Length: 261
Image (cartoon, rainbow, N blue to C red; front, side):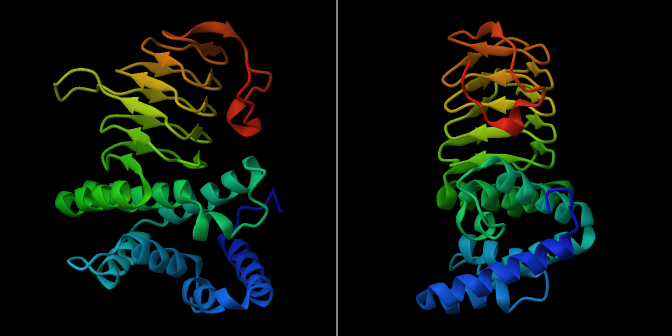
């Protein structure tokens, strides 16, 4: 199924997985029904599930679900990114052996999808609601992504606790990040002040990238590194401050998830 990226086929697979889960664990049958089996589509299930995670007394889940559904209707590319992100987690995380797991249980995936809705709101000039979502994502999932940041598709944030992505950051396609990663800003102006990350980059656990720096495609940032200068494509950097220490074994290090040197 790796070569297939069709949302309808993915949805059918997810429903079949959940039917099997319900048989194995009857205590969760109602949960699986409410979040997956009662819905006609992947878009509907995603909107409902994220709304239940992020809703609160003042902005109930029904309101958020309607907002999310409107975003998916207005911009089909959001669902394309969702599908790419599900496959990214399934293919890169050995702990993910079913396609439904990111949707239901992996907060990194959930945070990225909720960010996508906040980003849609930001571009629609509904910025107070976008910032509300940012706050709820941070409070509920411990991932802080500014709604103005630009994230590509095929994004995996593994474990995700403590990830921070600032307002003017940009992340390309097929990028993998681990928990504790920061894409932080330098300065107080309104210019670009956060990292610009190319396609296929692996940013390992606890790495801190600061300022308007460019991370070339296919680069690997070692765990715990402090990166304050540009990183060329297809090199490995490590240390505080980070220096070039070699080259990744894979041309797209985000795919093999090898955090070693």
